[in-house]
Length: 405
Image (cartoon, rainbow, N blue to C red; front, top):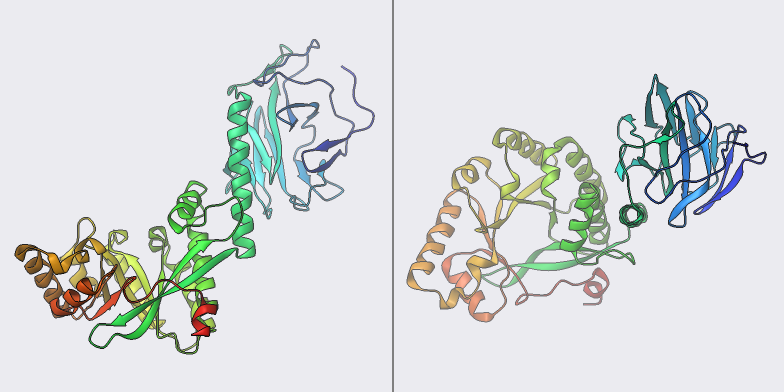
């Protein structure tokens, strides 16, 4: 097979240059199969994928390590702006090929999974350096390309779509393309506003806007932690523009509770931006799976001046024993317990009253969520709730509209 004497070629969004004269002509079929007539020793190849088909170039991973990046002395120079100077490297160990990301900004992926540690490749794996797409093959001694994973183009397109969404998410996080609104929380005895819960949503084309859908998409990409942190940062940034925000209720994702050091770092950064504003961290009670670990987190939150509200109480299994031990400052009752409370049966009314009384005895402030009518509001005050939140008291509003009064 002849070698290309001019090893430069177009990729999906830029150009690529091979530092060595090792581009082998030919292509493979849509399922990743190919063969060469020459009998060669076992060797690994990297093939470019462009425009829904295998492109017409292929390079042997001839050096060890074989480095990929924008820097001129890399073995494969990729000109796309998404590529880091020295992005990743292939390291051959006998017949095994290992791919390692070298701290790139936009990541290295194998079959859509981002590399956090070095990974052994299999023939036929799809590799992305940021948004630049390739496949790896191993040429066996028989002269045929060996693959253990045959991917048709439909599967590859699904991976491309997901990777594109990953790129959109990374841009959303990097550029803070989110919006927040503030919903008032009031004291029921006189309807005085005591604070706000900050609710977030997406603001990037091509991604969901509503929080549940946005987080579902983030979870599919392993980015839910980052999204939650960005929304909190945006929340306190906007809150700092309000004259008297009062208590600021900030949301968390359940996964964050499993990484307390990282969560505390995020909250300390929030604290610095809002100064003396009282922060309340909303935590879904079912996210607390390790009571002892949560006690430690609670101590750190207290030291940082951050209060705790357990959210969605009454939605599913509620745990009174743990609640008594963990002592949050606030308990937010889910709308399921509040809805049509003024029309409740005697049994249901008594059940809610007993729970509210028990919460008071624990030294926790009960807060009714999802109050939507005057009847519900009056019932919540009568049954013993101290605070309320819902459309009856005010819809979520942007900071600009709040400042206008």
